[in-house]
Amino acid sequence: MQPLILNTQLGFKPYYNVNLYMLLRRKVIWFMLLLIIVMIVLSIISRDGDHTYTYLAIFYTLFTLTFPLLIYFSAKRQYKKITAMHEPKSYEFSAEGIKLTGETIRMETGWVNINKAIKRKADFILFSSNSRNFFYLPMADFENEQSLNQFENLVKEKVAKRNF
Image (cartoon, rainbow, N blue to C red; front, side, top):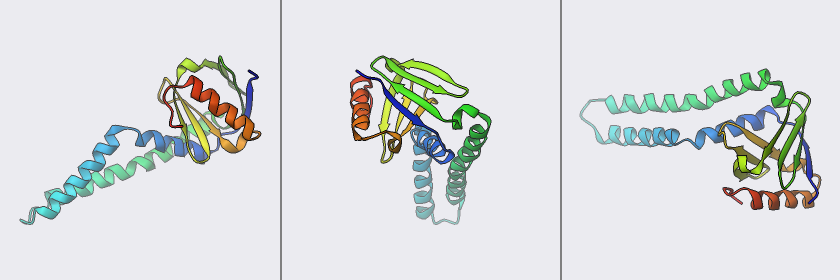
């Protein structure tokens, strides 16, 4: 099999979107949203003049709404600080693994280290064993439909957890 080459560059908006996606994958966020709903329901049911549930609902709502804001500032800081994040990169996908080459970064990883692949409307995200590391691959950066299909087939063959 001929290695598949993909040249791409990660912009801030996709980086922020992937960070939000990783936030929504965490169970604590869903627990907080459930807690907000419970507090709102309890504040509606409780009509005895005690506004404790209302205040708790407001607090949990504000607390939960600050997460995307904190993620934004953290992502902005990381994106500016880490040069390898926003430089042009070249990916080489083969049956053995992934080779990544940039101006300041060079790495190789085997498919065994990729534990999840996500296909979204306009991109692919490959998550490594370390849940914070990912490869962001826009579909628009593939040369043609054939190389896109070749990549999809390779991921289907090598990555167990995927949504396509």
